[in-house]
Image 1: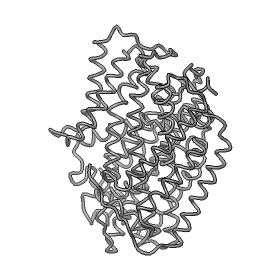
Image 2: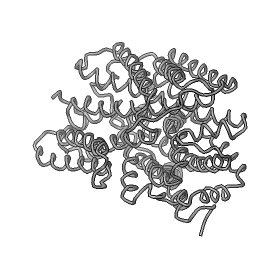
Image 3: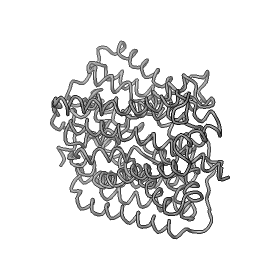
Image 4: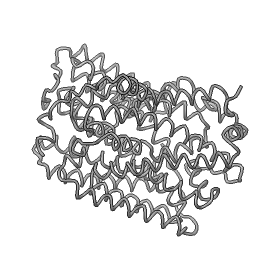
Length: 55
Length: 491
């Protein structure tokens, strides 16, 4: 059996690749856009060895 | 690795393509000049003042991701080995982007600049900076060579200017504009190049699909050339264990690239850091599926037209020159150059940041001021760029072979120790360092030995890194590990 001219196994690899790349997208859309859950913005201040001290 | 014969001299100069290329170079130099005026201090140069927004971050990531490997190397790999590259490489890369999305807050919340900053904190040892910096510089430098080889091959083929001259023109222009504007230059040129590239590959694929009678017909013709072309593991290209090792290696590179970590730390918030990976994962997975199908179209078209090539890296340039109409070829060229050069500038920039921030600043004991660091960044960008350009004149391997080598190096050295330590902060700093060194030596070393006993180098490297971490954890369990926010000691 073939789909789009390629064997089913190969077609499934393409589908798996699209799904693998979209896992983060799906999570972001469902959790942070649709459900409206905020992102925890706990970012630490600049550390002593960092550029912030120099600027 | 082996030396690759390159086409060093070609036929007549094509004035149309050469003109387009010259205009393109002038445009990126103009952006570099504008960015120079916008770059006020070393923070702007290194991390865009940590003000990178969602759109710029996303497209900058996409443009950086799609490189000479993607457009020349992947199409060449499909030409030589069929769709198995999707199983062996693309799947692991896409899984890696999504994986990084789920842990990116752990990286951004530390609010550092580079990967060695993070490792120095996790280990509690400043000496982690030069150790990690050397691994990252080796990766960035090999990556630079790959980009320059790809760009040189393409531009030589399409313009007719000999490779040995063109490689220096390309290297020179990109060193110049990266030196001028740092991440400000890189991010804005990436935004333009990324959007252009994705749109253009879609147009090129549409043309090839139409030309070859539809997608189903294209795949049927691809399979008729060789049934292994549409087999998930190819014709012995991959074994199951080989695929698993390759997925691990490429999955790991997403987490361990200095350019990626610098870009994450340049974002204006954790939300932006998450958004840019979420959006880029979707865009890139669609893009790569289109790209490998373009590779299949290229294979069918060249074989059907009697234009078969020996060096697979030349498949796509030959398609543009010999098969498609000049107008379509022009559009494709712009897309490819965008892809290659947007990655080149990012790696050049990463070399400069690593050399100044992780090596120079360590050896002068943090006493360098802003101006010195900016100067060292710029000088080292020029130095690494020139040496990489010289190496690209006679590269040590095909684009894909170089790509595989640095994936093994990065993943073996950094994936396990760094991300385990991010989640288990009581891990001994000495154990983390031992794990990094073991992985960095054993992974590429096993690869250089030809992978004895059929054991993939990525497994050996990652395995030794895990062993180093476990043994070190018990051997040095009394060693003080760094607490969050602690300033690393200087041992």
